Amino acid sequence: MTKNYTKNLIKNEFMNLLDKKTLDSITVTELAKKCEIERKTFYYHYENSEQLIKEIFESELNIVIDEFNENLSWEDSFIMAAKFILDNKKAIRHIYQSDYKVDVEKYVFSMAGEVISKYVNHLSKNTKAQEIDKELISYFYQCALSSALIQWIATDMQTDPVVITNRLGNLMDGNILLSLKRSENLKSFTQNIKIE
Image (tube, rainbow, N blue to C red):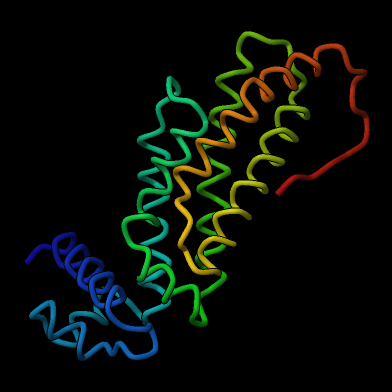
């Protein structure tokens, strides 16, 4: 088996197990058995479950970055980016309810940030918006969207985030562009600010 094939197999079977069981009830032995590999093969690729989880989120974030389509609305872009979470609700919930909660939060925050910053930068091409204002607008929406999605993960996951995101899009339609245009007429922002 090639290295990528084995790693993808481990990731897929891990997510399948997480869909059925809590993270703390999954063992490397069980995962290896599902993959039809030796335990040592798992450890050849991953130090532990934490490394596996981080790699899963990094891979998914790279997909979000690669598949961004600037012709879509921010709502559609966000929904596409959240597809991994929506398709793996139970698994994501099990990771969130484990010691790796922060990894879910970091992934959601990064994913929302990638989508919104790319969208704002695309929209700002026809404006003279100040760089700091583009960053502030992106950061505001990143915080709002990631917080809403994390809250959805943390609670019952019953409401449809696609419906909510589309509703918000209808309510907020044009606000990002309007904010970018307002930036053109504002005085330069002289205070040092670091947005993370």
